Image 1 (spheres, rainbow, N blue to C red):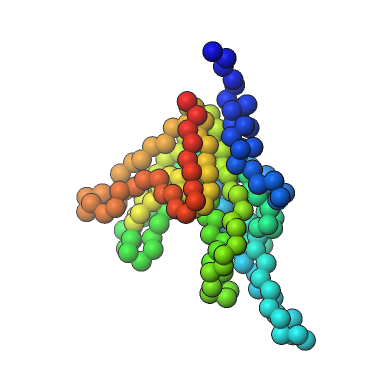
Image 2: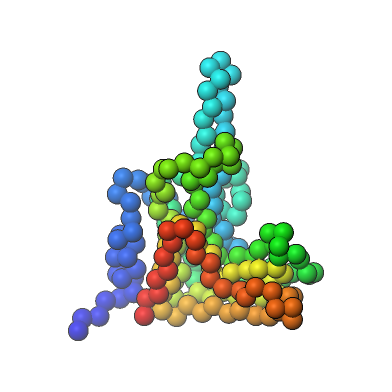
Length: 193
């Protein structure tokens, strides 16, 4: 039996998921309290023709001033191996009003355009994240609902030796929703053993 190093297996899996027609945006996240990747929609109206156009960009942590690149490109993220943890809540929140905490997330929901308020039938581009050996993440004292890892139409590779820890929340005594992984749409989760 031949053994392959983790990095070779990780590279092979990333190639299996790659989208051959699109370029890649490669990004490394090392922000200890949050790594949230998502989309930013920017709408334009040509005043002379009254034509409207929407451009989409990949962004990190809601920073619309510094987009990572155009949505038409695939997103490939590698976390820096270190400890990630949410900022602890200081009061209880109403989870029914959208209070949600993620430590690491990719939201690839390009089919819905908030500017036009419509859904499209287009193909989603690929979004991938690698969580390398030596990474730890803790979800602690979350108010409302939360996840250590949340993927929406994205894939993740979790390498051997990664440790996720769930600690008590403000609402634990009230038995509000359990904290867990959240996968939506066309998402997949891989763990390399």
